[in-house]
Image 1 (cartoon, rainbow, N blue to C red):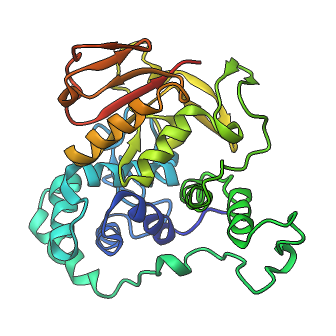
Image 2 (tube, rainbow, N blue to C red; image 1 turned 90 degrees about the vertical axis):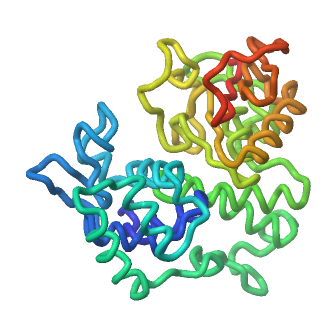
Image 3 (spheres, rainbow, N blue to C red; image 1 turned 90 degrees about the horizontal axis):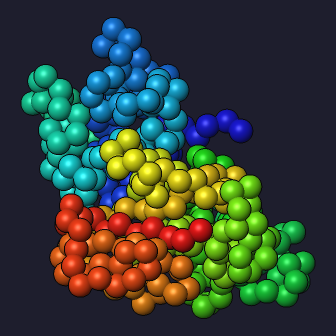
Length: 321
């Protein structure tokens, strides 16, 4: 499958991460030229955002990764974390350049990117996915799909198209949101409950959706950022040896997923998420949940009246196999 153009990938992740897509595109146009395969700095910087060896390019990653949707998502996650989330216009350009790119001459790059900002088109989210929403849905009519409602037909169609690395996350999120509106479990071909994989027995929720992915999708629906899991953009080599972040539990929709996620956002939203997961700890087979401002934590499934420290800017959640 051919990769989607860089501008389309940027638009997809900008909506998920709360970034100004036009600002991200403007900076990319100055850095890698809004294209795959860009190489700069005498062969040591790669991709649409020129991730530099020894700098923004994570250890163990290469040019091919920097020139992939996963590399773009990683860069945009770092932009959001460095102050660009929620900003628009020149303020967004400034935050991306000065907080993430950090070139030798930031003022010149800001001016150049801002000069291109207004000329970059942005596709409206409602028109960005070709959903079959005619009067009869063509071959996907309710009657042909077993009599389900139109919303259910669209959700099932989205899930069927959400298997590629390029467009899976956003399509999956839309499908789960549509089905959640009907208070129905997500559709999945696997059986409910515990399912067998090559790594042994894995816990799954309604529809066979693995617990880490269910928890991550909940966070995204709450407007939070999800990371440090192969399914949600990869894992950085910053965790302690043996961390659940490094444990691959299986595959879902063709992509690997790990045993833990880190969730970040505003303090109020992280607190809401901490308590939302806490209420679901039984159905999600919760192992650990750490968020220092809560004043307590869950370790190996048990509630402890203390925190472990180092978790004030994100919520860490891990799951039993």
